Length: 196
Image (cartoon, rainbow, N blue to C red; front, side, top):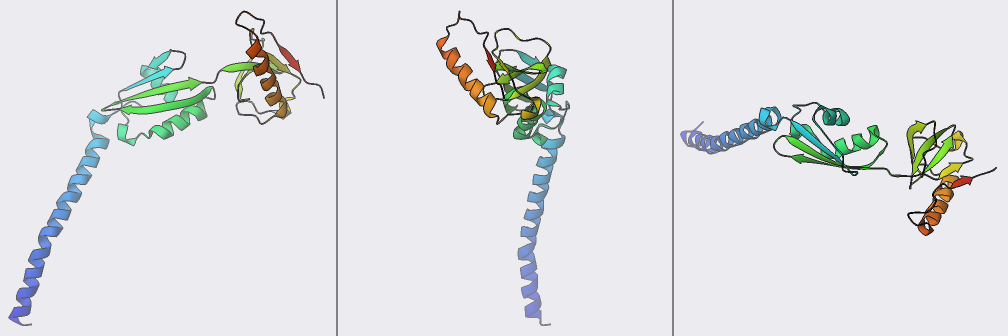
């Protein structure tokens, strides 16, 4: 190998080494920042504030339990969209949930609950929202002030879920029309019966 080609190879090596060094330093920096944000006590979840649409709130251990989250979970490992989906899945009374991270170590959650507009008798009484979703909280007693839908078979509907049942849709449509003409002082004890 000639001295000239050896010098050329050495120059190339010395030209490349700084770039490798720069890439190594940059990679180490990115890894350390990532480690800091996921392992630092500063970014560990300390507080959750849940505000319900009726004005009630939930904080502390109750909020962590409601969301099924552990205190001190790194906030960067929490996906707000996933938490919102889990709320709706685990709490069927919830219509929607908005979850936000509040840096450095808190979360804020706004929850809109389903509003019962009627009830259905399926052996026991179940509240129904405007979309035909039957809330899974049964009562032995009719709730005063909520119109009653009767004549449905339990096999025709799904409790704790939205229902694509024509009888429920028709009943809710009728209730909506009737309620639109009844003033606030009117009678709301309406009973709709279906017969086969």
